[in-house]
Image 1 (cartoon, rainbow, N blue to C red):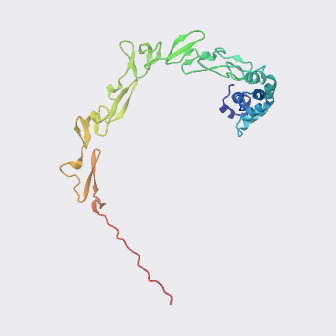
Image 2: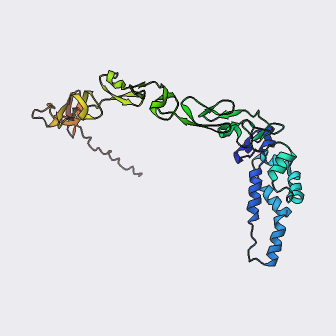
Image 3: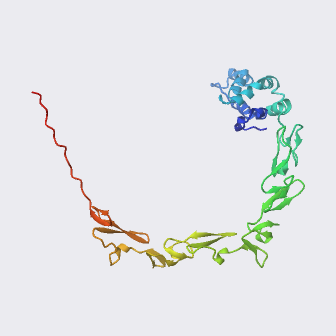
Length: 332
């Protein structure tokens, strides 16, 4: 029932569970710091003392509890304003904990932390450590719920004392349980190392020492011709070879089995052949230039020329034309 600001946007049917206690308590603390300036004069001491329990301070707090556009929040404050005023002027010293007096004992919509339901019964595992600290108690702090535990991923069971698959118990007694993750190779285990696996996960296999070790799937060459195999813990992946390769054993042009067309071996790497610098011209048509590309080249028309049906012809330059001048019409 410790309500957060965002919870105020809930439905009106749940309004009693969404009273803005944090904002009220913040208002109490914030206005307690109010200073009238000057110094610690007797007048100021007296004025501050009056302000501390004044209706002015209470009005300031209530007015700032909700955003003006939040109808539900403002409606809730208005509905219970008389009770808040009663506590403020008559009961604050006797019952300093507004949350306990108002929500739990007076309007009875909340329960103490660690309890749930109409009678505020202790959550499974006890009110001090609901669900043994390993989960969430349904209805914790409210008059609803059934007290059942929703366990964290490491834990399972009615009281969140047992370990989920992939975890082992590193500490266990009647009130405490600590579950720790198994080694990445283990499906189930009794300890933290790969030798403590009861069963290996897929992609792992037990060796002669009884430890679960990674299976090297790449040894079976599972990838396509233009790919190389990358072994990983418990699995593998196929990666594309470099564009300069025809088949490869790893990443980069230095891992090519054979160089692709347009590439040649140079310093143990497949390097692009600059066809434009070969002794024999590759662009043989008139008015053509050669442009080298990765693994190939292309022939383009020289500057001032354009391609027309496979032939580079001179680009026509539009001549400047002038509009014929019109004779002025003169009225006689």
